[in-house]
Image 1 (tube, rainbow, N blue to C red):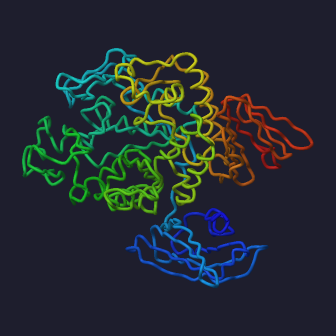
Image 2 (image 1 turned 180 degrees about the vertical axis):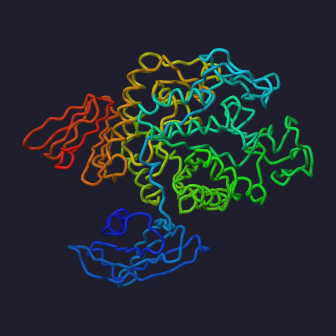
Length: 624
């Protein structure tokens, strides 16, 4: 007999309520073995991990039958607890000779004392790498931090070769700026974008700006602090919000705080042991040996437990977190969130909410955020009061596997695991994407089927998809984008993916936006998806129920307050069919799927590598 026939944590007949629960919620657990198995009693053992694995054993008394199944049931209490509970069952026959052990199963218990703003997960997010989106002039880098230089031509390839010292210093800039972004706000609005997420904007020596030089100033190549606020105002007028990248685990070697190259007049931690910033850094041997992010000398790690650093980042009234929300930002994305102490993240969260109750904090975590371990500690990222959502790399991984020929059941299993483990606020506020500044371009991955790491860096720098590769890549990208926009959480576009940009890993995934050379077919598709996401509450807030998930076929519905949208996908090389109820459906996408209507039932035919979004017509939706 299958153990799942005895207990299934995703079935309300076995466990209620579904999934993660708010602290204080009693959880009803029921075992349903077949009568013929002859079990007479059962026990549950639960370990409260965040209370030093305190163990509780609870009997499950027999409480009746359901058909040919015995029922054993108990209640697991969560009062006064926040964290993970791992629970297992033991079933025993009356003679004690045969036992069945089930588990362990995960129960996430979260703090539900505050209302998490829902705006982020509902709408489309657009990620901008500021130096590469749009420029209004070729800037003069003279006098700017870092000894940078500027590409004269917008179309050039970013520098990827090591310098004479064998280093890739990322000091080549293209000069993207705030004015350029402001000129394209209508473009972004027409794409259906509701949140602009910027990679770091603060003064920094490198073009990626992940080694912050000065948290008080935007990088002068981007513009001024005042221009940033103007950008926020203009975006707000169009109904768009702004999310900033908070890089608080490390600063730049070239920075006001470390001042490794002496650029700043005030003595930094590397110049003087009496520097006000000295305690921010962990020196193994002052001044030349210090802890750094992943051993990269140009990114000295900060001591997040230092009181003055904490006050500077989030503790003070005029802290970095609060000041930039006051300047117009609406939220923060935390770089390497799992390398920040939990109480540091909590402090950022508290400061953000104090400044703006509607501000959100999204964390960069690459795995299942409910079970994430870092530095030997289980993280509290999504247990309430820390991150409101996470970058959903598990979605990207499952989506890529499916798009490249994997069985749809693995996508369903991986995503249902997240839905079960995550508090609802975190599942619906996830930052979902097909690609970011840290991954190869999605079109290139789908067109080639791999990241081609077996080829030289020179080969990857000069690679362009062949026509057949690009055609196939576009078909799969359109399918993947439809899945992205139909799934719970914020569909996030990495700038230029909608325009057909190609490229392998950094810096080839960070080329300049191809203004005037966009792929109009992809652009139209993304725009349509963005507006569907904006218009349909089922796509913004709806639950998810899977209708199919085997082989190349994946289908689910999203439903909310009387509106239902069906999303169906076929990654195969042959057409596939999906039976539907005898109800009235209308196409939302101008794709090639066809609906055959008959008195016996409807059949949706999905051509190879295609997607369909359909709206169920009801009394309510007919009047939309």
